[in-house]
Structure formats: C-alpha cells, structure tokens
Amino acid sequence: MSAAAPLLPGARQGGAPLTLGVLGGGQLGRMFVHAAQAMGYDTAVLDPDADSPAGRVSHHHICSDYQDPQGLAQLAALCGAVTTEFENVPAAALSSLAAQCRVAPGAAAVAIAQDRMAEKAHFVRCGVPCAPFVGIASAADLQAVPAEVLPGILKTARMGYDGKGQVRVAERAQLAAAWAQLQQQPCVLEKLLPLALECSVLLARGADGQMVHFPVQRNLHRDGILAVTEVYAGNVPPALAEQAVAAAQAVAQGLGYVGVLCVEFFVLQDGSLVVNEIAPRPHNSGHYSLDACDQSQFDLQVRTLAGLPLVAPRQHSASVMLNLLGDLWGPAMDRTPAWDAVLALPGAHLHLYGKRQARTGRKMGHLTLTAPDLQSVRATALQAAQILGIAAF
Ligand code: ADP
Ligand code: MG
Image 1 (spheres, rainbow, N blue to C red):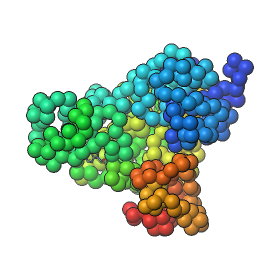
Image 2: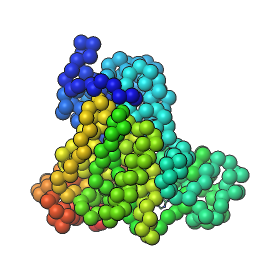
Image 3: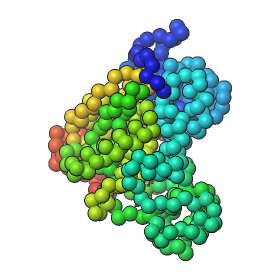
Image 4: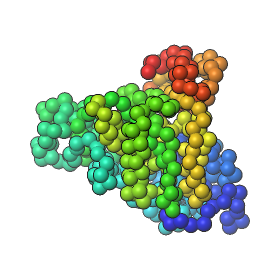
C-alpha cells in the first residue's frame, strides 16, 4: 500500500458512509470494529460464521468463505480499506482484494507470517537471531536432522496457533512418530531453548514508513497458550527491551509492513534475545492497551488502515492482563465465573468476546487490571486470579 490520501472518519465515499472492513470475525475483529466505530467509521466483517463475535457488532456482515470471489468483491465494494484479524486468511484473498480496494497489511507480508519457514528465512534476512531450525518436508529431511536442533519442538509450518500443531521431541528416535502425529505436513523442527522469560513488541507502521510502538510486554504462556501479560516499568531489563524494539522494527521494515505487527521473543537463560514468531495483526499480548494506554492497538490498526497520523501511544497505568479461557466456565461449561467479585477490585476491566459456547482452552475474554504502580497492580491481579481459579504467576 503506498501512501495515499487519508480516509477521514465520518467522510462519505460514493454517497455512503466511509466503511472499514476486516477479514475474520473473531475477538480481534470485534475489537477492531469497536475502535473503528468509536472513531466514526462504518464497518464490514467477512466471516463464514453467521454468528461471529465481530460480525454481530458490525454494520455489515458478509457471510462467506474467505476465498469466495463474490464475498470478497462485495467487501471491496463496501469498503474504503480492508484489514485482516488472523494470519491464516489465504494470502490470495488479500491479493485479490488489493486489486479492488486499499488493503493493509499486504498479501506478501501476511504470506510470510503464515509460513514458519518463510518467517524464519525473513528473520535470517533481517539479521535477527532465532532458534536453530531445520525444515522437514520428507523422510529424508528427518534422517538428516542435525544434532544441534535436538531436543526440539516440531511445529507445522502452517496454521498453528495457541500451541496447536506442535510436538516436543526429546531425541532422534521420536522424530518419525512426532511427524506422523502431525500428518507428515511440512514442518519446522526448532531447538527447545532454555527460556528465562517471554516478551513481545507491538508496533504500528504507516505507509510512509513511520513507526510507533508500545512498551515491551512480558508474557507467560501455559500449555502453549498466553495466560498472563504484565506491562510496567522494569518488567523486562531495559537493555533487552531496547534490543527487542529495534529487532521488531527491523522485521517490520524488512517486510515493508503497513499495519499493526506483533513480534514475539524469547529471552534465554544466558540473557540473550531470540525472535520466536510474528503476527501480522493486533495480538493477545496487546489487549492491555485498551485500558492502560491512551491509544489501543486497535486504534492504531484503524489509523494505519485509514492512513491517519501515527502518534506514539503512552501507557498511563501499570497493567496485568489475565486471559479468560473456557476452563473458567467449569467442567460442564455451564458455570458463570464470579464476575461480581472480580469487578469489586479496583482497576478491573472485563472484556468478554460474546462467544456462545465455552470450551477448554478457548479464549472467551480477558481481564485487565490497572493501577498506578506495579506492586498494587500485581496484588489485585493475584486476587482476581484467586477468585477465578487461575494459577498464580
Ligand atoms: P503459537 O503459534 O502456537 O503461538 P509458538 O511458536 O509461539 O506457537 O509456541 C507457543 C509457545 O511454546 C511459546 O510461546 C513458548 O512458550 C513455547 N515454545 C515455542 N517454541 C519454543 C522453543 N523453541 N523453545 C522453548 N519454548 C518454545
Ligand atoms: Mg506464539
């Protein structure tokens, strides 16, 4: 997307209100829709689910497959610009849309984020260190696995999320069974690294190349799923935070990226920083920005999409975000968590995504705690975790 005239909020296009579109109707799409509507845009969501969380709150919902040319044409006709809320939107759908309307991020960047091999090749190109890895596309590749990537994690090259599509491999003898478990799909085998902590950087990049970023988020994953994000001064040593921001900027720059990008990192026990993966969209680890910053990651997504000015976001409160997984709804998924007790805590912000059915491990919502300082925010977050039955952190 080249720098074009901004799509001003509340303007009209072809006699209709200016409309921003999103491919995907999950919670990220829903929060994008909320941000766009708050700024005065109409919104359109394309998602095959007639009852999707974002489709339900949008002005327009196009209920079609992501690759259906008619659905895409309808979206392009309605919208001044279109973005995506998940990286598994076929890159071809983005390219075909791009021929019809403004699209960000671009298909080429999304295609790289969709494929762990292409993603790692990009990290190498940018000179940002990642875990030692090898591509697995055949039995011969399995035979030739070098010792330096073991013990490792075998990950499907495509379509993995929340730790799905991953198998840990302790030794060479387990490789064949692990690959069979993943239906012998093309995979990446990467070395299992000794992690000290995990963190992520969210940035927004405009079509003119200008970048702004949020403070570095410190993330705790459980069973491959993000559980807790903590953001306050000192959550990550300052030198590492600086390094992570610079690495994220290099990755975005190298992609010629336009939009909101998340870069996930590992900090190893020896203090070194290693990039893990990227998400070409707002990210779960940035949800705290809705309540703890003067602009959220979704506000910046709207701005990058519409070509509006980017101003560095300012965090005004220390924050801890707890993910609310379906598990909290009880073994039969029929309980309602004690929101009244949680909302009695100072600085508690509840976000539920409107998913009709809870399931184990399913992201149903998140809770952000905000406070003036890290001691009080950690104390209230631990209280909230205890009320909800989330393990302490
Ligand atoms: P997903 O796409 O499911 O988020 P990730 O590659 O980010 O997949 O892996 C999920 C989590 O698994 C990471 O956040 C981290 O906790 C753990 N993990 C992934 N790769 C490694 C690795 N090479 N070494 C150690 N832990 C890892
Ligand atoms: Mg991840």
